Image (cartoon, rainbow, N blue to C red):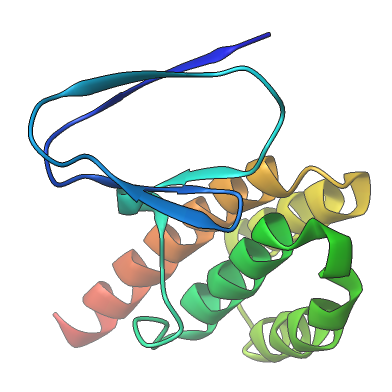
Length: 132
């Protein structure tokens, strides 16, 4: 099944290892094969990963984009997972971590990213409540 994407001027898209950028006008793209795709708004770079959940997200993103070499990211993934669990996080965060891990085990990195985004958002709310 093909995937239809609409890119706005200036918007970037990771398409496998390639970075595409829409230049002038809105562009409609049809992706005909299965390939890792990540929109600009869903990218967290290593430089932006300043919390444990964001670091976990960035690690899963690497797994998703480099599925052929996924195993080389497992050590970092499990290190971050242990770090998050050791923080005595609430049940909601543990449930999100379980959801992320289940998706990783299934090999569904895209859904693992979506689940981890929920964890990043949850972490931001908790941190905001602590400092606000």
